[in-house]
Length: 229
Image 1 (cartoon, helix red, strand yellow):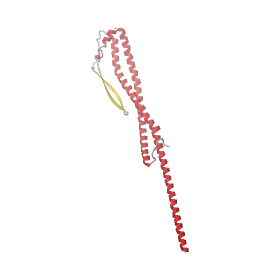
Image 2: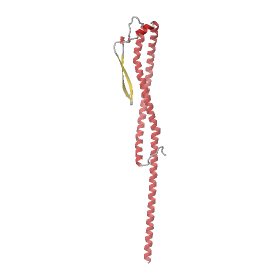
Image 3: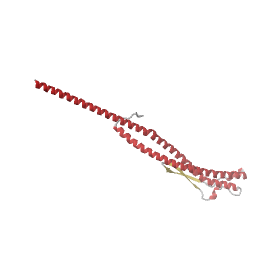
Image 4: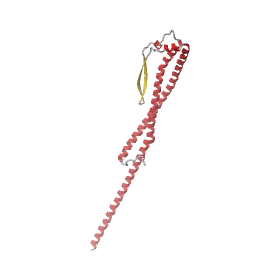
């Protein structure tokens, strides 16, 4: 018996067969999409691992330089040196499509193309270690932005993979078997109804033949009586 009540009609059977065909085709497409998403996801994960290592190394260099600079300079001078930055950044976000998933693309443009604009202080009262720290941070910025883009991409791809996996499993283990069971049930019911109809027709035919035979025997008996009279 099917899990849900279905009408055992030929129209319903035709409809279910069409839905099953569509479901099988959709299941294959979703599996292909899931496999491609997994491939893209693994590429992004590998890139994310390498980029994270690079960014962490750059930040460690900047941190070490700041540590040395803070040891050589007074806190007041260090704070005053970094209080008013000269350089600014405009950040823009666009999107690209990966297997129907819109992932972000971050781009930035600095206010000035002059590389010395990253230093918001004069060089007379500061140490060279502070210059190294500021330069290391400026170099790490692009990597940090790229890392943020990659991590957001991996998050969105992971969510889409999970969503696609649930759809594949729902079709493979629930919807398609349910439709196959309904088709099997309707086919059996139609075959059973057809056999019942055939048996009824044979019984009706036998009854008609029996009645015709009885009528023929009665007519023959009357004819025989008439001849004897």
